[in-house]
Amino acid sequence: MSYYLGIDSSTQSLKGLVIDCDAGKIAAQASVNFTKDLPQFNCVDGVLSNDDPLVKHSDPLMWVAALDLMLERLQDSGFDLGAIAAIGGDGQQHGSVYLNNSFEEVLTSLEPSRSLAEQLKSALSRSTSPIWMDSSTSEECRELDAKFGRRLQADTGSPAIERFTGSQIRKFYKQEPDLYEQTARIHLVSSFLCSVLTGQDAPIDFGDGAGMNLLNLRTMGWDSEIAEFTAPGLAGKLPMVGKGMAGGVSPYFEKYGLKAGTPVAVWTGDNPASLVGTGAWRSGVAVVSLGTSDTFFAALDQFSTDPDGYGHVFGNPAGGFMSLACFKNGSLARDKVRQIAGADWGFFDNEAFEQSPVGNAGQLALPWFEAEITPPVLRPGVRANFDFKSAEPAVQVRAAVEAQALALCSHSLWIGSFDTIRVTGGASKSPGIRQTLANVFQARVESIAVEDSAALGGAMIAAHCDGVSLEKMTEQFTPVGELCEPDADCAELYRNLLPLIKDLEGSDPID
Ligand code: XUL
Image (tube, rainbow, N blue to C red):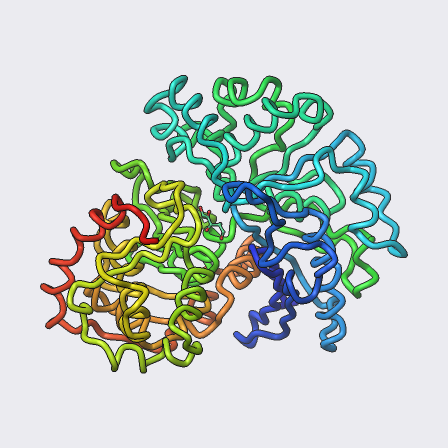
């Protein structure tokens, strides 16, 4: 059998994609949009509303409801899920799910006649899940810094960061000690969904586990000293760390035509999955992913950390490590700029760039509508070095797109310089955005033919665990789509603009 299913549970949607490794083709796909398809969970764009703009939680029951609905849609598409040889998957990174001691029992006794959301509700010890967009744990980060200093970054790959799971768990333990006490297991989004799919407690992989400030990347195990300081007894509440196959599909999913016992690979984070799904798991190529978050990542030849302290090191699902820089104001910010400019998405393709000069006469705007991650700035608001509000729409769009590209470039210098950058995510479809990236990085920009690189990566990881060659799948499924060559005439102009980004990042928001 040559069919493998990859599932990507990201911030705003959950997608499934089946690859056919014999034919080298996508055989089926289905997706669920949280805002549109599951409005009963009140998570607009995947997030519950909260009075505190720094608090970003989601409803974990929405993710399992999305899993039910996506599999139903996949089955309705006419594809026989009984032909799937193995399943892999990934989740938005850092988000955590808190479960009581009934979790394993609930998993082993799932009834097909009832929904997953209905049955898993009683297994939650905390009804909401903090996700990667949350920036409310600065106090806990400072406590971790004070205790461990540079060791945190040297051993876990990242200094204490607000969205990372460790500081989130510490905040929960400090603010709700009784509920923390009732928590028997803390999963990441990825390992939670993998547990549900296999009907047993699943491990956390090295890719996603490294986004917690709890995994020691030198020993590749939980760091007991850091875990105990983060929250008493935490090591006993974490699943195992592991790779390979997690288990077999739970009989619950036979209702969608899946065969019980079909192997399920340990799930990973969306960025490590994308590293595989873009073919960048081998060193030499970097990836810019333009999704809810914008990220820059690449396989690392050897373990090294960001001297500025903003970037991260995660496990590479293909072995070794990967680097990553993450920007919170990605696609939702571009959408806000689009609204301010009174434009449609087509305007981002070419028009905006034809109607404004390259370099925008030095006018830049960082579209920080939310607290930013890189660099960590808690006070939201657009940072601009010109009168952004009254400018022409084309100037507004270019100012934001060029500032985002320059920020990506500036904060990825520690990772290395690359001749080729692969782009993925919704905004990578815009020729204007791709050309801007090529010019700013002075690198050839390649878009890959398959749009959902994270789900594809999940499917490729499952197939690889089942013995299929990663090299072969990379040739089959990650061919280059559109190519953008850099314009050498822009090199100096952008080199001169690069230092302005740091000034802008340190400036106050415009009114
Ligand atoms: C990476 C990060 C985001 C999330 C959501 O560190 O926080 O990219 O994985 O996609």
